[in-house]
Image (cartoon, rainbow, N blue to C red; front, side):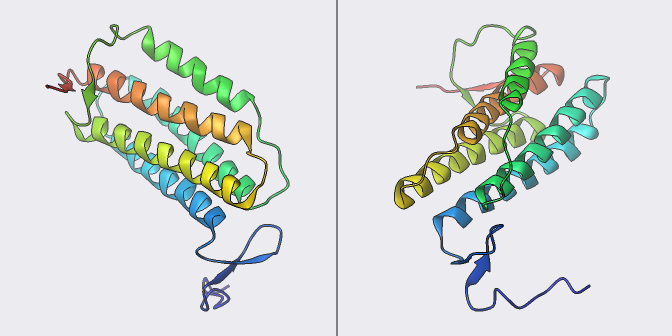
Length: 181
């Protein structure tokens, strides 16, 4: 099977519903951003796998699960008729709570960086925020109902990425970069 179909050569592509749309469509921007975020999560996952210590396997499993849920997000946004489970949001919240038990109270604004893995967590956080904005912009422009569970999941994924950055930094014994006025 050839990977190229040539059906997109004139600036149009198909949604999961079979409908053809321009590649500039805001819906495509949204699920393209989900794909981009999935790629960054994969990069983070690869970086975490190189770390020393027993914490890597658990985070690899979590990040793999997140990659699968991001694929679900892309499918929903492309028009696939499939539910997006509320349990996905609950799972992220559980992991956030578990990591926060191991962290001190946040008293300063943290800047991205300190290590490559920590910085990648922040890249995932910011791309998740862009994905959230893209979904809302698409819904606003097209007058379609907001896929609330998807938006909630992406919002929580940004939170997870922030907490993961702090948690990974602690495991790596990294002093966080803090904002200085």
